[in-house]
Length: 369
Image 1 (cartoon, rainbow, N blue to C red):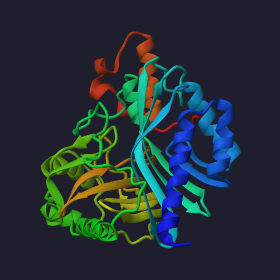
Image 2: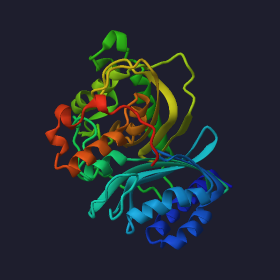
Image 3: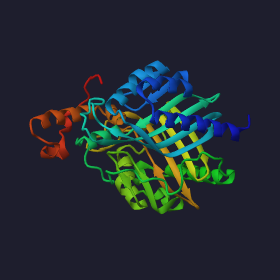
Image 4: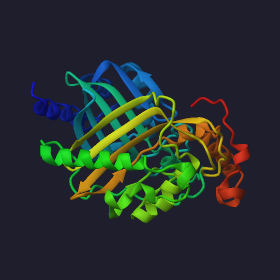
């Protein structure tokens, strides 16, 4: 089958799955999943879900609890695109789930209010079936909407819905091949420029990465809860990139990265890439109040880009920060539970020292969700 035709079919499989799930009754979920997924689906989610194998477990472990907590949940996608990467067929998308939070979810107390869960997801397609899935949910955003502050207040903008693409990001039709190639080349050049930074030499100086060659001056970077969004190159450097590289900052490591590298492709003016459990840096210095541990860190991180002319103007970045902090021996769920217990006694996080939590009381503990 011609790749262009196959790509359209792959996107249609994911789009139809998303649409059918929006109106699904609980007893219909398994049938919808069977139509879209291989029966031995390799499903991977952000903490605390991690790895799920097979449709039965996917429904039992993920979908049933989610639908119990948010009975009217609906997916609102902002981006959907497909492509080839390393010989594999990919479809990916970004958006949010929204529903009324009526029962506790993952130990997060229900609010009875409409709640938004931002998500980013990559799918591997084979024979018009989803055989692998990788998804990051902004669970810290759910905690925040429930009134919990488990990280220091973000430097970037938090709250409200993440900025949508400036142009249509749901690419259900065939895109211009030349435009796709331009986007991929720009993303590739930008990614290479990140390697020009040398932590030991540059430290707080971000200029070696030559942002102005790749990013629009009014570029919008939509990060996860805990980091927030930035809306200029300078905000991006000040609110995210500088704290990040001072905490981590390795651009090349001696060890093989491992994990899963996924979906490095572009379609039209949009590009996508991601890593899952890949080694990316030693934890050199303080990050979000946590002193450097000198541990080798792995990362779950996705990117979607929108190009406008010769520049990248929008970038959406889900990061599994709960998993990252677990590697630093900090349990963000534990911080939330401590705040919840204090709330029952009439004490709110803003009454507490050190931005609402005591890091020394938040070491990783063995718990079940």
